[in-house]
Length: 76
Image 1 (cartoon, rainbow, N blue to C red):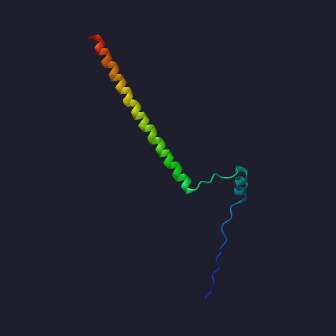
Image 2 (cartoon, rainbow, N blue to C red):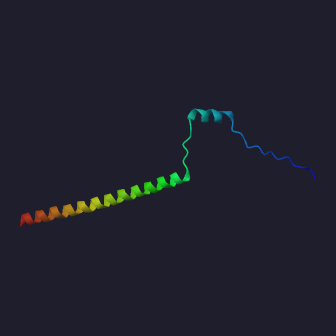
Image 3 (cartoon, rainbow, N blue to C red):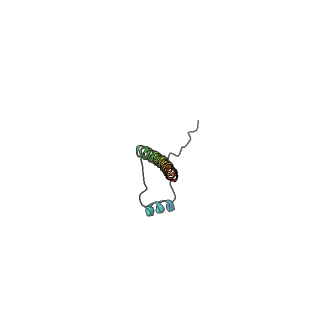
């Protein structure tokens, strides 16, 4: 049997890649827990906005009904 030669070295990026990485500064790294927490908070904020909008619409409709009812009573 002839032994096979396996190259265990990882491929190296070209020099241009390293130059760009050096100029762009440190990358923004975020761990999984921070990402999940941020997304969870975003979902909660979105839900709060929807509920506030819905409540505002209901208040607006109620105020319109009160105005109409008040105007009808004035005309009688």
